Image 1 (cartoon, helix red, strand yellow):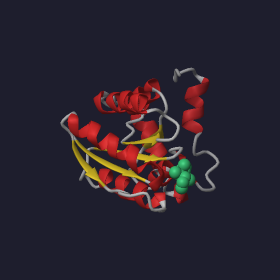
Image 2 (cartoon, rainbow, N blue to C red):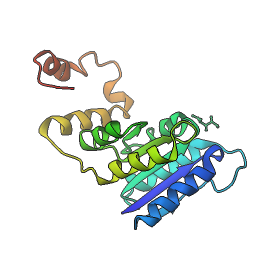
Image 3 (cartoon, rainbow, N blue to C red):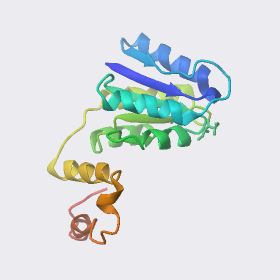
Image 4 (cartoon, rainbow, N blue to C red):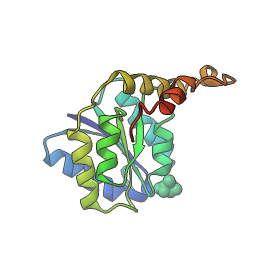
Length: 171
Ligand code: RB5
C-alpha cells in the first residue's frame, strides 16, 4: 500500500518510528514532514496528507500531532477525506469497516508506540464493508462539508432519525 503521512514538530521522532514501522511491513510511505523539531503549523501537514489520499496519490493517510486532535481536525476539512482520531484497536476497526475512514489520526504524546502499531495494523488490514445503509450515511457525512447543503435545512437528518427510531441502526 502507499501510505501518506504527516505530523507536527511535537512528534517528528515518533512519526519517523511510524515510517520505519510501515516500511518494514513493505508499505511505500510518502512522508510529508515535518522533518525536524522546529515549531510548525500542523494544519499544513494534515491538509497535505489528506489531499494525497483524496487525489489518489496514496491509498490511505496517517496524521500525527501531540494529542492528534489538531491535525486530525485539519485533515477532516479536506473534501473527500474521512478521518478518525483513534486511541484503541476497536475504534480503528469500526472506523475503517463501517465508515470507510481513509485518514487515521494519532496522538503521539498520548498513545504509546506499541498501541499505535496495533492500531495501524488494524487500520491497514481492515477492509471497508459497504452496505446500503453505511454508504448512505457516509455520503451524507461527506456532504456536510458543503455547508450550503445542510445549512438552514431543518430536515437534513430526518431520514436517519427515522431509521434510528425504527431501531434499524445498531451500535
Ligand atoms: C502543538 O502545536 C500541539 O498543539 C499539537 O501537537 C497538538 O497536540 C494539537 O492537537
